[in-house]
Image (tube, rainbow, N blue to C red; front, side, top):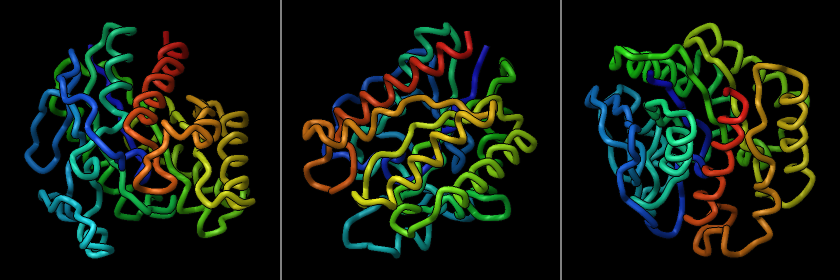
Length: 260
């Protein structure tokens, strides 16, 4: 039996770490590549730099600035470094005994609005997930979305009630359009380091308590922000390779505990 895990959000979900810790293949796990319509053994670096038309784009380089964002709907782990996805799937497959297809649907610097129905992030997430389902004849019917997003909404000053409204609309639209089983939240860490972070953190905590479609996978990001080894020393506000590995491992354990 095969489960689909969709990994969505912004740069910390893409993976913007300082190095590549491990590039070994994850047993019983595959990544779906929309640009080539293929399943490949899952490993880091994860993801594909996908253009808005569904074709393969360019690797991100610092000199590109917003030019890369203007051309791409989703991105791969930056600079070919570590993401959380292989470790998440390593735990999931081991504990459940199920095969996994991982779908990358993250883009750095994206506010939640980008992923709402009718917007490019949503439309490609749905297309890519449906295409991944079609690639397996052993699909279990389980589709889980793992969400790490909100830093850009904090920067923009989005208030708690607005974020709650939007994330609920997003999750229930995906429940209808792709048959989403649960919307798993890795609660966002601190990026602005002021009350704007608090608004998003509160929104994500509340929605997981108020709506059964949501599942809080871990709240540890805000504590990890205080531990230097878990943060990327080269890019402020982003987790290190070690930090994302820990987030992926711990979040997967929670998901597994809630589906057995």
